[in-house]
Image (tube, rainbow over all chains, first blue to last red; front, side, top):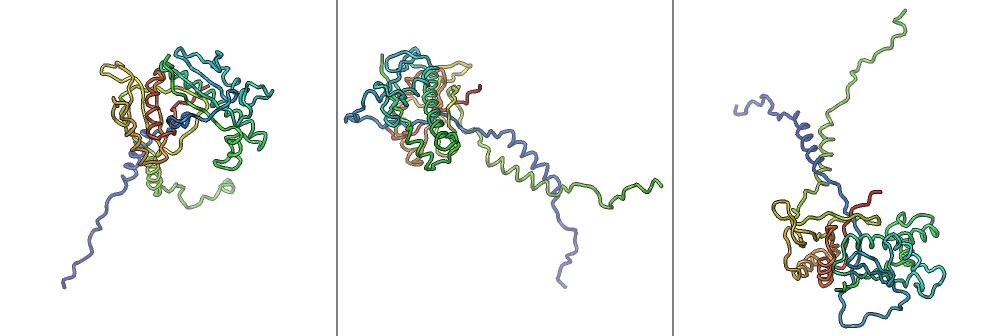
Length: 180
Length: 150
């Protein structure tokens, strides 16, 4: 006798406006989303110099690039325009004519970048961009010759990519800036 | 006779079922909710990035830690001296960057420091920061640039 009558109007939440709410939220997130990928020039800094002497490097394997306070570029003491940096570097690294003043082999080539405190950052990045461009061109060329695809199309961490990297290792050294 | 060519109409109503619509919208909603990164820092320095062509993408944002260098924003739309900003605050003491970065490196051993430097800045302040980074053993850096439009 105590059993309640269950025959009642069913309690239901009206779900028809759910889609509208979801839409509203969706539009909010659509507007606020910025799918921005961070891009930039990657580098690895050298460890701080202790008192020990740096390993000896033969002068011919070293390309000194100096960007001075006026934003002028000197490569091994000679002035260059920023547009000429890339071709000069490729020549230095590959050394097609076995010039005794240029790098012995691409693996041994080192690019040393020196700046001054007043060097404009923009010029520095442009110059670094050219250096990276030189290496990219060389790697692309090697990759095309060996595998028929540009370097960027090789799989990450594949033996092929490793081989190209070993052919043209990016040895870029950032020297501590001089004062004058 | 005209009735002869008339097509037979099916009895069913031609309607797109919309009952799955909220589900679809919800899935989209979740996608955007997950991908959205609300701007977490307020910039106290002005940073206009430079442009470069040969750049790489950094897919793993977790590894990144940002250092901003640029002229300080002063009230009244004025710009002050070049300053360094890490996280939410301007770092006045450059020597303090060492411990700050070292702590970050302990949390994330594969840390990449993204240097976002204003294009009109000089190299001097950046050098001091780089020296500190070297001392903190955070060697992987990245000069943040925009893609050059040709």
